[in-house]
Image (cartoon, rainbow, N blue to C red; front, side, top):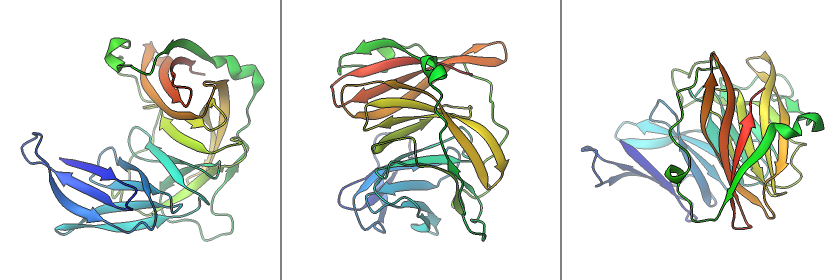
Length: 271
């Protein structure tokens, strides 16, 4: 089992334990980034690590014999890449950046034709804004287990599968660049659904759903709900399970935290 950490010293460390205990040994020190490393994320089903950096890139790391090496460097963002999240099976992931954009990535080499990624307008509709409603506000001293019970396992709404080799290549299939007016600090994908949420420096929580997939190289994602979540930057968002009604997921819980020192708990009514 592996554990990864990242740091302002531009490095990523990978630790391993063989006895499933608490003693970890450093097995790799990765130093390809040229600036602070802000976030690391494992592929859901493979020993492949992704790192997001102040150098505007996402790097893909995988075992290479007895060591680890960088298999691909993803470019496209023009400022710090703060966070990323995979869908449930690892068939796609989404990144967010200080450049105010959100990008969705999929397996495969980028098309050779001009305009290798689509651009989504985000399409926010004020009529759907009430789909996100506050459930509770909590003080910063907070534990998940004190409020939310374990959720039922939700049926999948996805038909995609993970690539045979998650080490790449990957390419951008959607660039949402005109919805967030300030840096996007965090993004999280709702498990088993074509839905993700963002936390932005304009204090807002936004929810996006897949509108259409024109091809394997292009998807259209739309902002279907937004709400003022905090009185300061919204720094993080996290989904927490789903509620199942028959074969359809009716709603999902999510939490946000902000510079105002508040943790917000929200319920999203799925479309």
